[in-house]
Image (cartoon, rainbow, N blue to C red; front, side, top):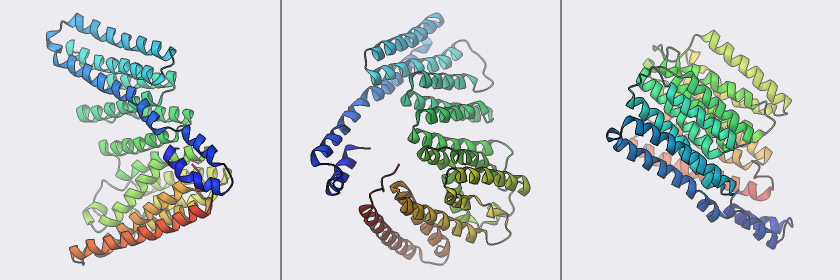
Length: 407
């Protein structure tokens, strides 16, 4: 919630007799956007200071004796941790967390620089995984979103290093990302859990790209998270956890529609489709768990989400048409549920996804035979018209209903 949103919606509350103008101003005063922006300065300053310290040490590393390097890194790490603890006790939370983060950065930088100093051989990304694990431990101890974001970034760095240097997927780094998701869930932090879900999608893509697994297997761990989201009583957290699976499946379906005519990609290649029965059985089991969870939570209608995960790639013909239909069914049922539940976020996302589905269908049906200039002109007119109409309907609906700002 922001001050601008309150100032925009406040007159409607006053008109409905819910609050008085004075109460609207009092509520808006609790959400000072400028104060929130200023509060971010210590965290940004901590990031810049940490980068500066590490770059300075790295530039002069060769001229510093080995023992002095060790002492310098330990002193910097302990100094920042100690200073952070002291500042936290004085009530300056953001500055204290920024200093704790600097201590953690010094710890990670020390691992790398001391490894180079003493010529330690590395056969995996264990040192970076240790760094990420330490970040998660600090995030847990201090209940800090900032430290959790730093630790999540370290986990991705560890995975990238493992793949780039050793050409192996690090399951330890992936498990740390799962742990980050658990911490986000315990915090009740839906935006952070959404970021973890999208991170899981990136890790799943790297997982299938790094091994002998067929591409479609990437959707299975993501729909494990999707099914888990159906068992959460907090719907905002559940949707955040499910987002990685839905985004990945939607993008794959759109990609299949646009490129299904490429016989190398979808007919004669060995990289895309797993053996049908194990893959379909895995999806069917997850579907059953998901629908059961939806039923227990009273949300059975949301089972329509699964249309986007149906593996039409196993069909001999008509795959692109069915995926195109799935895109429209998914976006329209999301839009319909948004209106039925008076849920602004679902209406917004349903509108966006319907427009994207229309754009994909338009590109598939007209690209090969239409003049390219006319293609872009008509496509632009179509998108602008649809966007204007859907936004008009959405605005009118949210104006007439008071429940449109559910989480």
